[in-house]
Structure formats: structure tokens, C-alpha cells
Image (cartoon, rainbow, N blue to C red):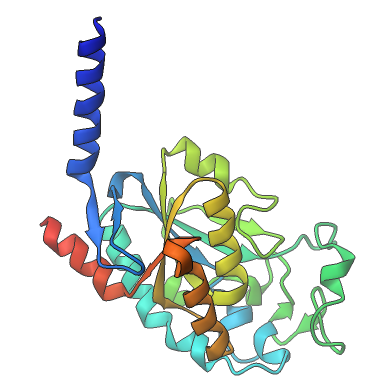
Length: 243
């Protein structure tokens, strides 16, 4: 093969990639992605965090802002499934003996009730307990991976990175809770690993609205230092343009 032929083939591949790319009207500038190489990661939409009586409310938080995004997350899931994107769910969870939960984490939270203690929905943040399950409206479909993560980030002590590489994924869409903790941590971990990330800003939430707003500003600052952000309607519009 001559050098020119190799260069031509490389150019053809680049053109094919560009032809498959969709563009989302995003901040700080348009986000381009190939759906075949893109996954949606829905972070920790668990009963423990979303519902009254779960860990979130035990800590004294108003779960209303988290419950309010459930319809948007459901619509995002429906879009991703219709467009054949890889859909991945995460749960913050621990082994029943808490051997994967470091003492520093166990000390955090409410002094009366913490990780592993028995709450209204079973042992808090323990795998297999009712409160640790993803809420029924957002239940994973057959074949959708569910990553049980012992930390804030979805990549720490999990097989997520290997799974994404095996599937040829280069771009990630993020949704879930809470914006400033597990969602942001996961997005930063992904950015450090070379993934191009978009946060669907109205499909994530915090118990503290000011923290949510600050996180949106931080992630997309300085030319998208961590990634992009856009509302669900912009993502929906990108797929409509493709049709």
C-alpha cells in the first residue's frame, strides 16, 4: 500500500465519522457525537435517594428536587433506547458486610443512622435491600448493565471503563443524582479517561439547588474543562434533525 493510499483511507474513515456525527446545541459550544459510540449513564436513581424514608430523607434532605426530575430521566431513557444507545445504570451500594466501605465513608452522614444501618427501606445503601433498588419508573430493561459502585464515582472499583472500551464507546451522556456528588465525580473520572462527556442538565438534580447550579457552571467553564451541558430538548432536537 502506498503512503497516498493509506492517507486516503484514513481520510475516508475520518469523513465517515464526521458523517455519522450529530450536533447538540450545548454550552460552552456544540457537542458532536456518533450515537453508535455513545452511552447514556444514569447515576444512582435509587429509592434510598429519591423517595421519602430513604437515606436522603433520613439525613434531613428535601427529596422533592430529585423526584421532580424523574419524568425527564424517563424521557431521556426512552430517547436513548429508541436510538439504540448503550444504556448503563449505576447504584451506590455496598456488600452486606461493608467490607468495601472505608471507615472514612462510614463516619459520614447522620450520627443516628448511617450506611449499613436498618432504615425504613432496609439496610441503607446495602446491595439487595429494597431502598437500594432503582425506582420502578426508571427500572433497567433486560440487557442494560447495572454498575454497583462503592464510591461516589462510577469508575472507582468497578468494571465500567473496561465495559465501555469493549463496546467502543467514546462519548458519554450523564444524568442522575446528585449533580454535585456522584454525577459530577463520575463525569470528572470519565473526562480523565478521555471520554467526551455531556451532562443533560435537567435530568440531574441536587438536594441543594445552589449546588446544582454551581456544578453546571464548573463543568462547562473554561471552554468545557470537564465537558458540555445541555437540556434534554436540545438532545431530542439533535436526533430529530437526523431523521
